Image (tube, rainbow, N blue to C red):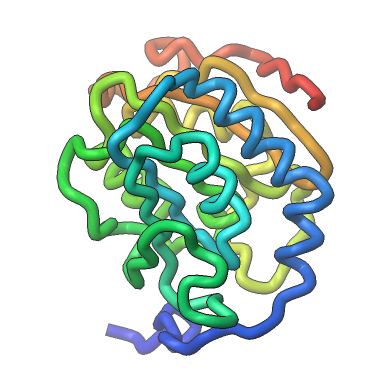
Length: 211
């Protein structure tokens, strides 16, 4: 098998990433708040943040569900000091095979992660695995289609994002945009046995609501 070092996770702390903070401040944070409202849960047992980065969303999720176990998952550590950024538990792991039990989480959040993965389909199928039936998922991707370092997939077309989620067993209820983040709000449903757009009910146009 050909060696692809750019796909090998470097398990090293990352001290500073101004781009990540800018994404959060310019739209990702508003999208995370929209996801919390969408999930509409009074309480939760387990909430997962995939591709947690510096833990901005992890902190917001922990505030929304103070009684829940909040698990931040990333392939490398972004902590400045142990426990400083992650109010819950940080687990180093692969987004294609989350270190979470089957059907354990009521909600899963992931932003600016899917476009970096070697297989978004395999990743989403694993995210489906860890959610309870009807569990809420918020999937945020770049709202622009420019080629960027590390971006392997262009998911900025809301119809493509809708289709990808339906293929992997999610029903998308709405798609919103804030800043550079396009966010699909969906719930775990059933994995279909067809790839045809008309069978899956993929709309000809997907409305995107600005936050």
